[in-house]
Length: 148
Length: 282
Image (spheres, one colour):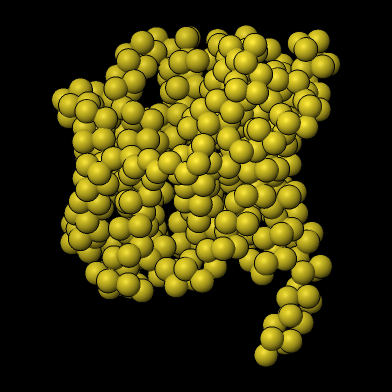
């Protein structure tokens, strides 16, 4: 994709985020604009880096690390970045992703309906393993660091 | 390779012409889903919750070629590229939250900092069963993710939104999100009831999932250990904050590669079995 296309699509997604932020969380469109602009610019910078840097690292890794660097205490613009993005509620940018992802799996509906029970079993096992693994590991870590 | 060959569209204008229906419907789904808001259903002591994101996903799926046929197979493919774009601002937002809380995380102590590593046990439990049930590459997406948005996002980015892995991850996201709140409350009571674990560790484990899971699990724990309720809640929310940040890197660099590796190791064990099972049913 060209940078132009990235920019345009990021703006489309941001319009979705602005609506979700407004209708779902009552944050006005005006208040969302600075935060959305920051998110678009850092996303674009990540796209540039993933194209320029030859090391194979997923795009989301750049997004996450650049976001962290811009908001870290040593960043000269961290106050502005943090305050403006704070207006964007956690799940708001993910709602439009949900719409597109739903459309993108639209050709697997029949499969989902017939296989759904399997996902429930796997989901329950995943949750149980994650929870139990976490209790065991945390108990161990708390013990060796003398926190219990 | 010539440069023009890499692009799906000749120009931005052509892209917009082909995709405008997806943009408009995507936005419409967001507007409807956000207007409905969260729905809570009480079941016994627990709650079953539906989130706006689920409605948006369901509207998208239902409008596709296998139901309302509003979108055709070509548009389904195009939408998967848009998912990757939409993920970026979401992950940037998480990165910014991480940066803003950098000092809190670094000073949280080693137990909290490395808290997310215990999650990897979930893969060992879920993956073999998923494969036994006959799942293929979707097992990788289903087993390496719990229910968190960032996990869905990372899998979509690594394997592509039209991949088997991504649909497995998305299915678990929906299932986990719907029943997770109920199940985490139940699970916390059961593990606390064994008497084997310290309330502090149980509190930390409550924070592994979405915020709402943590609320449900730590509420159950607070009822069982009323004198330690404050410690449990504090540990749960600290671990939830830390893992929503470290979890991105754990998923990206440990959980997904580990699941992929285990899948390849386990595949020879399951391939002959599933083939045989298929023959028997025939």
